[in-house]
Length: 197
Image 1 (cartoon, rainbow, N blue to C red):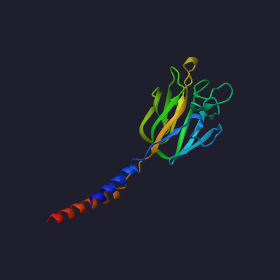
Image 2 (cartoon, rainbow, N blue to C red):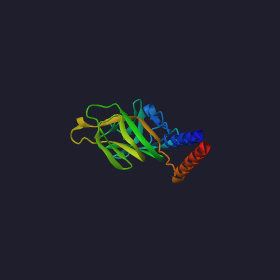
Image 3 (cartoon, one colour):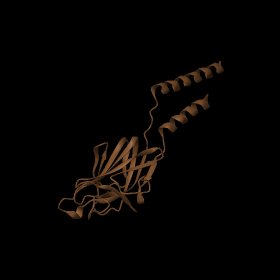
Image 4 (cartoon, helix red, strand yellow):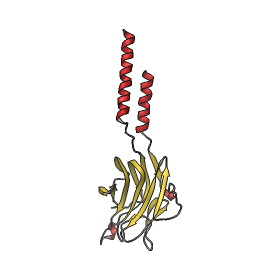
């Protein structure tokens, strides 16, 4: 009986403690489309979704290079997520809810910071935390945004997104499963009590 209950406990932990998946974006490594496009896809370890480029100044594409992925709007714009000439941002959308763990930026300069949104709600304003930890939030999307510096171009935010870590959202054990485990435990106790008598 002890082995049976232990097996149930292990299976519960395995379904709720799924392993994290790390997506690496240096040179577009974990992107599925090898060209610069407005929306690119990613898929690894059972987690899939899209990353979409946005720019306040117009349309942009998801750019990628050695340090990671960014936004390119054409002309003199560089390929980082930057605030020159208007805000730029990348939105990561997942096919199913995931547990957000962290995102890591590269090619940072003094004064670089970012705004972070989860499912459309701003959770961090002008953050400099790198790795940025989400606190294991369950969500279907997040956005990293660089601000326009206004008149002071020396304060422009610019960076690449190098890596993100997410995990499958935990699957809640249904109430009937809890009742089943409780019932089996009760039967085990009754059996043990009978053996003693």
